[in-house]
Image (cartoon, rainbow, N blue to C red; front, side):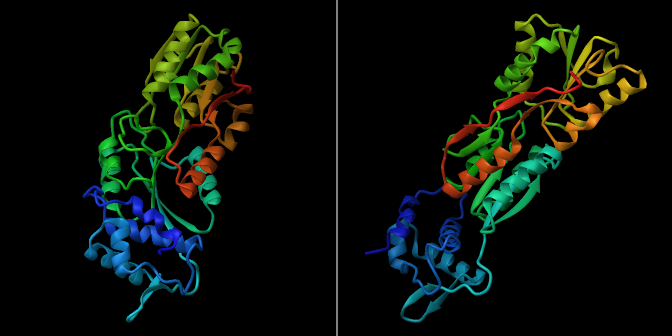
Length: 343
C-alpha cells in the first residue's frame, strides 16, 4: 500500500489543461515533499506504475518528471529498485514566480514581508509587467510550468482572467487585486478598493468638510488606479454633498486655498507638496493632502502625510501563509486612514 504522503497526487486527474506541463506538476509536488522533509534522502518514490495509478497520467509523463528530478539533483535511479531521494548539500528550495507591476516603497514592504514569512525553503523569482498587459501575459505564458507557485499582482482594469486561467490549479495566488472573472478557485489576498476608499474618507469626514473641493488625481500613466477606487471616491463625495472632480494632473486646475487633493502616485504627491511650498500655502490648513499607500517616508515627509493604506506587511504575511498551506480562499486586507498633519 502506498504511503499517505503521496495521496495528493490522486487529485491531479487525467484532465489537466493542455497548457499545463503535466510532468512539472509531479516535479513541483515531489520537490515540495522533499523540501518540507515529508520524504527524506533514501526514501523511494512510487514506481512508474504506481504513479500512473495515482495521477492518471501516461507512462511517458511520469518518466519525464522523474528524469527532470534527476537532472535537477533531487533523485537517483537504482537499477531494479526504482527512483529514490538523493539530495546532497543545501536543501532544495520550492520555486515561486512573483509578478509585480513595479517596485516602489510600499511594494518593497510587501515583498520583504512575503519573502521573510515564506522562509528559506522557498526561492522567489520576481518579475515586473510595468502596467503593460502584453508583457504581463507573455511572462505568465513563458513561465507556466516552471514554478511550484504563481503569485500575481493583476493591476489592470481590464479582464486578464484568460491567461491566468491556464496556470496550474491550486498554485495561483492573486495579491493586492482580485480577478472576479476567473473561473477556477484561487487564493487571493486583496484590497476592496471601492469599499475601502469610501470607509477611509468617511473616517476623515470631519477634516474633509473644511475644504471647498476635493480632487482625485487620476494619473494613470505610470500608476494603477482601480476603477473601484474612483467609484468609491465619487460615491463618498456625492453622499456627503462634497464638491469633487477627477483630474489627470495637479496643474490642470487652479492651485488655490480650499482645495484638497488625493494623490495616488508618489510623483503627484511630491508635486502638491512642492506647489504648496512655492506658494507658501500651509498643508492641512489651506491645502489638504491625502496620499495612498503607507511607507516609512510618509511618516516624516512634510511633517507627516495623511495616508489611506492597507497593511502591506500583513498582506505579505498572509500571502506567504496561503502559499505554504495551499488554501484557495479569498481574503480582504482591510484599509484605513492614518491622520497626520496634511489634512
